[in-house]
Structure formats: C-alpha cells, structure tokens
Amino acid sequence: MAPRVDPVASDEAVPPRADVVVIGGGIIGVSAALFLAQKGISVALCEKGHIAGEQSSRNWGWCRKMVRDPRELPLIIESLRLWERMNETVEAETGFRTCGIMYLGESEAELARLETWLEHAREYQLDTHLIGAAEVAERLPGLAKNWAGALYTPSDGKGEPQLAAPAIANAARRHGAAIVTHCAVRGIETEAGRVSGVVTERGRIACQSVVLAGGAWSRLFCGNLDVELPQLKVLGSVMRTERLDGGPEVSASGGRFGYRKRMDGGYTVSTLGVRTIDLVPDSFRLALDYLPAVQVHWKKLRFRVGGRFAEEWRMQRRWKLDEATPFEAVRTLDPAADPVVLDRARASIAESFPAFRDVKIAETWGGMMDVMPDAVPVISAVDAVPGFFIATGFSGHGFGIGPGAGRLVADMVTGGPTLVDPTPFRLSRFTDGSNPRPHPLAS
Ligand SMILES: Cc1cc2nc3c(=O)[nH]c(=O)nc-3n(C[C@H](O)[C@H](O)[C@H](O)COP(=O)(O)OP(=O)(O)OC[C@H]3O[C@@H](n4cnc5c(N)ncnc54)[C@H](O)[C@@H]3O)c2cc1C
Image 1: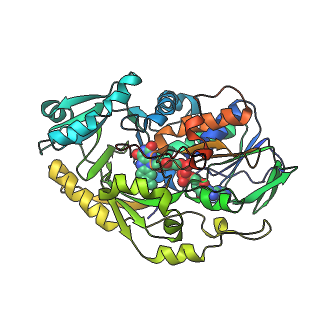
Image 2 (image 1 turned 90 degrees about the vertical axis):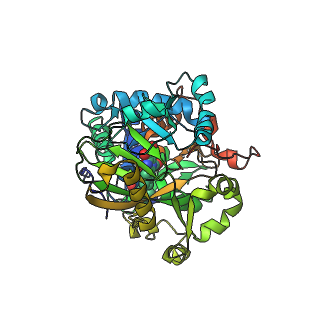
Image 3 (image 1 turned 120 degrees about the vertical axis):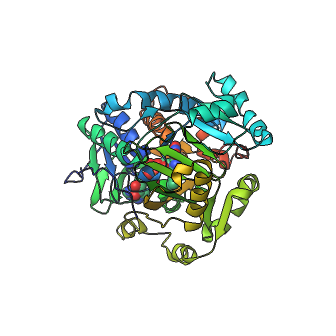
C-alpha cells in the first residue's frame, strides 16, 4: 500500500524552454528546484508520477548527523541548518522538529563499537555522546528492556516525509519553477557535445543543464546515455501505528527496531537491522563493486529470488527518444513490504516497549532505496556530457541530507561557490582508482 502524500497540482503545459530541467520530484529534485528558482534561474521539474511518490514519502523521516560516513558530515550539518528554517522558507509545515536520535546498545561490546564513531563527532564538534542505562530509561518513557546505554545526538531531528517534499515543491513553484507531474523524461539531447534539451513523453524542453534526481531509476536513465552508474535497489519495509499516547519523543533504533513519533500521534516503525535484497540481473553485473558492502553488512542482508529478477530481465534498457520508456510504464514504484522484516521489527519493539504490543498497525508499505557501493551519494557533474549533473544514490539516508544536496547541486549547476566541497561525491570515484568503500558503522 502506498502512503498518502500531500498532493501537488501539476502545471498544465510543459514549458518549451528552461535554463535547467530537474528530473524527479523526490526530496532531492524539489530541493534543487527550489534553490535554483530562488537564485532566479528558470527551472522545470518533471516527475513521471506524483511528487514524493517513491522513497521521499516512504522513509522513516529521520534527519540525522549521527553515524554517517564522515564524507557526508559537512553536507548533513548544512542540511540540518536548512531544515531548521525550512517551515519558514517554504511557508508551510514540513514536520521538521529537533527531537534527538538514539542508537541503543544491548551490550558493552556494542556500545564500544558505537563509541568509535565519536572520533568523527569530535572533529565536527557535534553534540553526539554516549549515555548510560539510567539516562536511556529517563529519556525513553515506557522502556521495559534494560539496555547497556546509547549513542545520543540531541540536535538530530525528524521531518514528515508525506508533507515535506510537496511543501518544498509548492515553494519552488511560488519562486517561478514549473512543476510538471505525470511527465517522464525519456532522455537528453546534445548539440556540439553538450546538453541542449530533454525529451519528455509530452514534448521537448530546450535547456542548458539537466539535474538527474531520479532515485532508484537513475542507473537505467544513465545507461541509455552510456554513463555507467553502479547503483542497486534495496527494499525497506515500514509500518505506521495508530495514535499511541505517552510513548517516547526521541527517535531511536536498537535490536531489530527503529521508530519515529509522527505528528499524527502514531509511530513509524521499522528496522535498521534487516534489509531485503531481491536478486536481479544488476546484482550479478555489479557483484564485484558491492563485495566490500556485502562483507560489512552481511548479517543485515536478507536475499530473495523472486519475480523481480524476471521483471528487470525483461525491462527495456535501451530506447530511442521517440519511443515509450520504462519510466512511463511504472509511474510509481510501489513494492510490497517484506512481512518477515516487519514481523521481526514488531516483535523487537514490543519487547522493549510493552505499549507497542497492542497498538494497531494502520498501514504498511515498502520503499525501494537507491544504494551505491560505498553508501555515499553521487552529486556530480558528468564529464562525458557537459551540462548533465547527477544527484542520486542516497543509500537509504537521503531524506535528512536532501535539502543540503539540492542546494549543493544547484550551486554546482550555476557555477558559484558551493555549499560544501563536492569532491567526495564525484561520479569518477568509481573509476579513478580511489576504490571507495563503505564506512563500517554507517548505514
Ligand atoms: C523505507 C525507507 C526508509 C528510509 N528512511 C530514511 C530516513 O529515516 N532518513 C533519511 O535521511 N533517509 C531515509 N531513507 C532514504 C530516503 O527516503 C531517500 O534517500 C530519499 O528520499 C531519496 O530522494 P530522491 O529524491 O533521490 O529519490 P525519490 O524520492 O525516490 O524520487 C525520485 C523520483 O524520480 C522520479 N523519476 C525517476 N526517473 C524519472 C524520469 N525519467 N522522468 C521523470 N521522473 C523520474 C521518480 O518517479 C521519483 O518520484 C529511507 C528510504 C526508505 C525506502
């Protein structure tokens, strides 16, 4: 079942020209469109389905600095600054609140492992610190199980995924962006080797630059341009509870559960502990690139072989721009939640918080995360196609960093000083011999 998203109306017409076309109306695309429009750049955002129909409405809503790959820290710090004034910026409710996030440790050994991340917190003067069992119990009312302690960041926050990207899209429109939904971009046209326009299912838009913020579809889009993006899809499964009064305000993860208190008084519940991987042809094509990530996360991965192998095998990978594409065939990627993962999450949270034993589950959904071999996004110009930029591969943690990433790519497109140094996010890291690997703790 797809979660209900705040609807954003589409512009009626596809504009014939824009300075920049943004492909994809998730948190990254709408943020890029907003910051470009705020700079006075003419921008058209095309979304094949509806705004935030895919990952950006299906995530937990955590906006965290804690336990990120250190390469992402300068950007997430800036992104949280943008979140803190987001309601004001977009003149609407995005649900952003500073609530604190905790990673619980069951044993001293687990705490010691979490503690290793403090070296990065110190480097960036973050408020992340270890707390003991008594403080955990005090900060998480209703906690029954005894935890050894936790890694805690009081300044981390949360947003409402079903409100945030729509609110940002509406603000981008007020600043002059065209927002066209139900409009797949089939590909890019070039003149003298550089971007000259995009072809959509509803006609051509002449432009000088393109930002691909296509989430789980980005590899397919790039493939038709002969640009190799080593991206895979991983299924996340989520449930939403009915209202539950008196529960914890601080978001936390431990054992096999993770949760966030929602503005509607219910909880979004899932697990950081298990990720479902459907084996598809790309799993084999990219096996070598992902070997280090599989070694690091082996215990968390639940491999399955099923219908998705044949589905992706049959999926068209090359097309001409006057032909219908897979983007038009699947308006919204709406995978079913993995019941095994949700059962484990439910049992685990009920063991820690007895109040969750009897709360009704109002809905469940799946979301397809777009991951990179080192779990760090690509926010990069594509050297082979001047004028083409990619902002994708957020590897299951792109909601929190979304506004910062949108601002960074907007800066890169316009050629001004950038919000942070974009070098760690370059696409060429996969081919220039730097051998990028995932951080052992970050997820
Ligand atoms: C279950 C789950 C839990 C998560 N929890 C968190 C969390 O707590 N915190 C966090 O920071 N992150 C979390 N994430 C990750 C986060 O949701 C994503 O990283 C983020 O939403 C990515 O945003 P995006 O804009 O890149 O992609 P998406 O939101 O997937 O948007 C991409 C859009 O591009 C459109 N598109 C693709 N190709 C085309 C085309 N050719 N033409 C037109 N449109 C196109 C798609 O239809 C889609 O709407 C979670 C993800 C999942 C699935």
